[in-house]
Length: 187
Image (cartoon, rainbow, N blue to C red):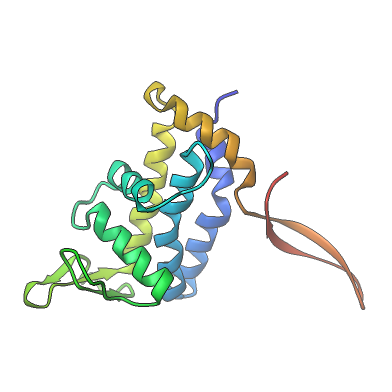
């Protein structure tokens, strides 16, 4: 039976809830890491082998699903690599050589997409990046229901059971049995 949007929303609930928790607790650095890794997760799910591979699948997924064009798919991939693999906000190539990530402002002031041309820097609001990422994933959910995406949808359906998600786990302890959330695959 083909995947429904509800199936996909349920499968990504752990990630969407984590985004919301990061925002409500103002954990924007952690939030940034979550939102830059999610295109990898989606690209892996839609691949034949269930793996994201090199940067090509990540960039293709970003190009197909993000609606904003201030960051190219290559820009997003550079952010991902620098941040997740090197802990940096600078890159060696590309349109921008540095990225400034800011938390949302309390007022209606927005600095999202603020480019400082002479520095080749772009300032990005992490809250807006989270909103855009959730939106891109939901766009992808809808595309997976289209006949043109049949192969990718079949791959997602095949690999989705391995997507990490929270579920109760009971472990014996000194004070009896404790139940807590555990991120583990659904089998």
